Image (tube, rainbow, N blue to C red; front, side):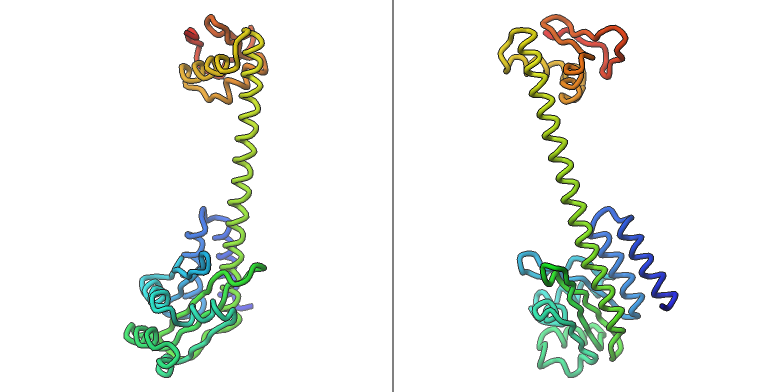
Length: 249
């Protein structure tokens, strides 16, 4: 493999690990694709409920041309998305019958060729990687497909990350709720209070000490914190996680 190509794909891999969100990853990938394919601009079109939109581009020209495709509902990206196969137009000079609105707009912008590769995963066509060139001919089909695959891979990875983060958040919220419910029960039994009043004691302590309710509840369960109708206390030898207690009332 050519060293330039290898370096480009190593950089794409680094971007996948380093970027904090999918939008940043796709922007970098579009820029790298334009450099690697040696074309004027690259854009990524993605579908949301079957409606294509521009999600990334290598620059203003790529954004403008992709926006024309979306607005005109025609062009290589739109066609590749609908067909699920690569679309090549090595010369826009003969493409006006095919794309009566997009082809003239692209030539007015100084473009001579346009191509698109569908971005696929197991669910079908996600969108397209669309290439705009100022000279006739076609870039490497293999490299174009490889970059489109990198788009699909990146989107899939970020979706899985989001699912995992959501699952972690839900698990943490569930655990926190269980701890708080248990602490309410302990206080209610210890002080012979109704559950709502026991919960209010927990909340009052947390607010007055600028502490998280979950942390206060956890300390109650472990015995590190004793809340009564009097000032809250901690057993000897325990290091408090919150400031010295204030009167519960």
